[in-house]
Length: 418
Image (cartoon, rainbow, N blue to C red):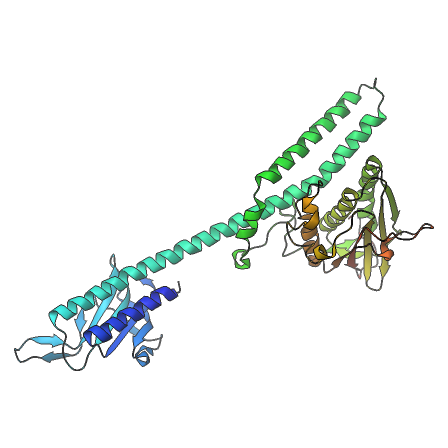
């Protein structure tokens, strides 16, 4: 694990102490590249005085002494042998992980001075252990925060994807109740379905409120925390890093979505207009991901269009792309919100409105479309190309989304439905 800048500064300060207070002419602090229990280790200088003394090649192997040794030695007038160079191991709990080498040329070290050098070595030993443990703890915390952030993202995505089928279920339940006579024996069952779907919607709303989305964003601010792909769709079918692409018929995917959209539009008092040529050229896409993208755009158009408004769904092909337009005559999107519309949890002015939402759908849609090598754009006021003209002109309001999908080179349609 790399040494922190704080520990290196401590080493430099201890070398300065050796130089200024004890008169050392050369001092070097070496650390092993990894903690070892053997008597051999690969050493790396991390601080030295003068700095040229720290040019030890990392490939050199030095023997770590089991105790303090001295090189070379001189004999004093009293006949006692005293060292001019001290080599002290940095050791903690029988684990050797470095060396402190210091010497002076003008005189040998006294016993008291040697004890001071040993205290410095002990200080460096403890500091190195604390530095390593602090880094290990920080790394563990970062990994924990990364896993926590990923788990929140998965939960957010799954909750968002539950809302579309739940909305369709509630709409169909309402239509069933309206169409059944009061004496119909199945009316009570249809009413129970509607009641339970309302309860599910309440629980999902409570789930949203229980999750602190702002704290998740704080955890995910550092992109380096995310080390593996995050599932976007249930059961690990798809991930943000890889989608299985195949030839798909946009008509078949839209057909299922338009049935549900028609029921919702009828229940909300909206006009739904569609223009989907049959057949359209095959596109290269993932059926599940494409269904998720188009479902989200259609649901948003129906949700943000007031009573009496219109939702237009149009598909065409041009050059190498099949284009799917989803336009509405709703509230529109302010210019200041357009640039950030595809950010996770960003809702702009809609965040202050009465219509609930998490700001996840468009972010998920863009990431999935990019994985399918397509693109998604938004226009507000709506784009005339997405308007289905029937003796009327596009209004100067509303919103248009266009999804561009690459045509597939395969000429024959795939077997079965996408």
